[in-house]
Image 1 (cartoon, rainbow, N blue to C red):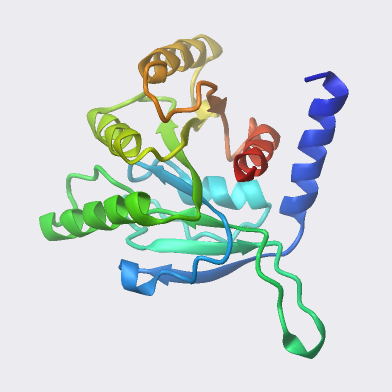
Image 2 (image 1 turned 135 degrees about the horizontal axis):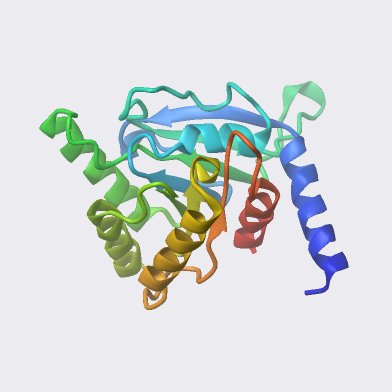
Amino acid sequence: MTEDEEADRIEEARKIFAGPIAFLKSAPSLDFLPDAIAPEIAFAGRSNVGKSSLINALTNRNGLARTSNTPGRTQELNFFDVGVTELQGGVTTPPLFRLVDMPGYGYAKAPKDMVKQWRFLINDYLRGRPVLKRTHVLIDSRHGIKDVDETLFDMLDQAAVSYRVVLTKTDKVKASELAAVTEQTAAAIRKRPAAHPDIIATSSEKGMGLPELRAAVIDALT
């Protein structure tokens, strides 16, 4: 891809994410999932990895996804419509696609029954959602891949769900540390059948990697 083509790709994604985006609903179980009328792009990761903050930064909307300093705040699948157009008479078009903020996993202090419920919800959604196009698995760049992340990778590989690793909070580490964790992460997913080989390094606070991630979301739709 030439530099001009890459610039066009990023600009197209920027325009889409600058358009209408709205919270649709929360689903505490599969019974509450919205109708599968649009492709979905999910964001998964350990509790407090920064999923909600990244979605807010990605969409340039501070309050779209709820954020909290308390790990495990997101306990449901939260759906956001991207690209809905309102027509005459109050009729709306289907969204171009949906973003899905998934419950955080791996927080040991959460009640065991709640952890079990979250695990079942994540597993059932990933395995049974036909419109799911890709899952972005967020990894805190300060800590790298943990065992619970490997468990999610296994689940995604077994379900043949395409996924891509996104490093978060890269502004919190030195450049040398970021290079090391990026290489370690790339090596860990290299042999995984459902993983995208390229890793995106991001910072919600500094805006690093967000244009590339927006473009990657749009690429995943096709």
